[in-house]
Length: 599
Image (cartoon, rainbow, N blue to C red; front, side):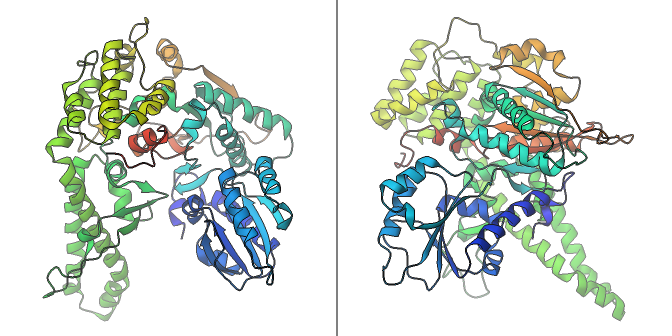
């Protein structure tokens, strides 16, 4: 089931198995039949750890979504709440427990994910239901394996919490997650970091290491280096439209916990003579990870190179099916039949991805997409960043989606190190008059986190950073790339360029640029127990864990995979993050009324 977790340089299935073991142990504490009541947000992350079959083995008979009122009837001995430590959820749980049938009492249990909370327990006490619980426990689910080289905490508002609300809880969870990793994969000898949050996580890790000195198992280190990067060191990258296949799927349809929901009409199986009647109305749900051979091959390509790759694959599959005509002997026929399930799966995969590519192409070939991309690339290259953009003005006049406007205005601000006061005031006035004054709080939030700000007296450092780190590459080869800039068709993500330079020639070569970026940069060393120093074989690559605090995009992940696969890179990268994001989900997390229907 989790074969894709074995295939990378680091076997991330060890982490998944450790999480499954803890889950089994908790379920066995509640002896007898069980119904789980889920905090809806947790069902996706838990699906990556354990399928229903595992829960069933431990006497889970029913599953419900947490909502007010009474829990649906179920002939079970135990009711187990799986919830995040949120006060508003405690109120719903209290309502559930209070409306329980007194004639047929059941045992109640709470499992807090990822940490127990005294505030939540206090709220349950105030509501008079705390004593109704037999077990109150915590399930430490910090880093969830998404793929063979990808881990995420799926902490939905970590950027907002850190930069807007000065709440560092998610950083504590990140540090704990890194300690769990080190318990399973050995001490990471070198730690590099850039940014305030990175410094904070490193400090907590080093303190935890001192507190637990001697308690960790003796394991040969798997990772050579840990790089901690603050999202606010590179605010530009998530605002830009991702141009890899996986990035565009996320931009257009949104990938959630490794799954995407797509318009059903493109995937309808039309039978002969039926025409177009009875088209499915349920969205097509597909799982996306490297367990699917074709997806692993095309997901990190620039979208302009996907068509050729699909066409090539179609010819290979077609030729494989033609082989059946050449099978003459019983042995040859038997061999063909044994390959048939794999070939049929490949054909089905090709059909799905051809349909997805067609859906994406409908959007990427539109005039609107091209115009927006042109403006983005002008901002990134420093063209007209200091005056009102007529394109943004027109988009506001046409009442285009507000998030599109905010992404472009924030991008202009970041590329210009802030906007002139009169330009900023113009944009604010236009947005508030067109989309409503309720968005004044959102604009304030964007200012507070540094995405939208007035120009200070300081000079604009972005052109210097762009030139020194080669963030813009002319004539990027999208078909056969030789640089990470292919993921944005010209723009090399700043975060990944920093990672690349760290590996070779090292950050000392860009000391001046690092000082221009927010937050401190630092290096720490952790003592590896005697006898556990890694002896590197000639030609063996180093393994670096890059941890993005505040979120990472699929395009950045693609760029890091590209670096891992370069022949002379000498480093393989494993990626960890607090959340997988795109520009839309990121801006939405900073809005104060995102649940309202945006125009």
